[in-house]
Length: 185
Image 1: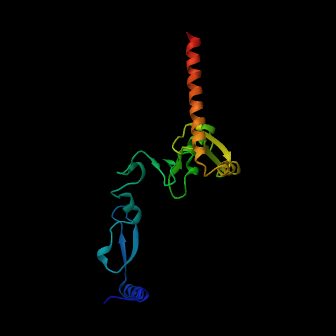
Image 2: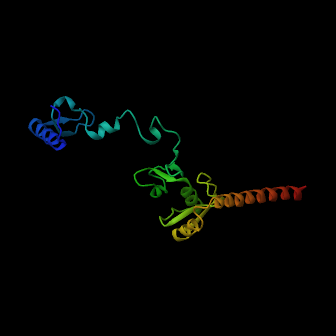
Image 3: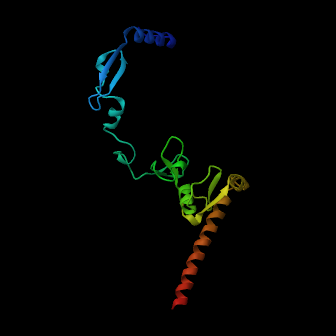
């Protein structure tokens, strides 16, 4: 009989569960711990405790996962994220609920030999989120970062200007290398 009222259906389900539930005691076949379980039918039971069942899972997580792709992903916000082991000194920088750290923050933290504070921001000088070279990153306070972002956040020319600045720096580096080679000869 189909229910039109969802609350009535939920109430019926609760009543059925309360009337038909049974308590079971089992001994785990792996570790020998006693476990207490409440089920409606005994056919849904497992003969392992939860911790033993999780240890013997077919699919592992992290590096042991069959879907592991090296621990480098691109987040929904466009930043590159790096998997960090819980034992790592940089594990306190992970995003909440994950084991991933934004790559630009990790590179800056490794460069400074310390974890970054939450109020410290790493700015990409050329505006490209995937360009995480140390010479393209700048550590700044949250206030400075907000000021920099608000100067011309909607301006398309800003990105072109930053790209040109980056290209000039690259060409200056190449000129220095050529001069050094000429001096050696």
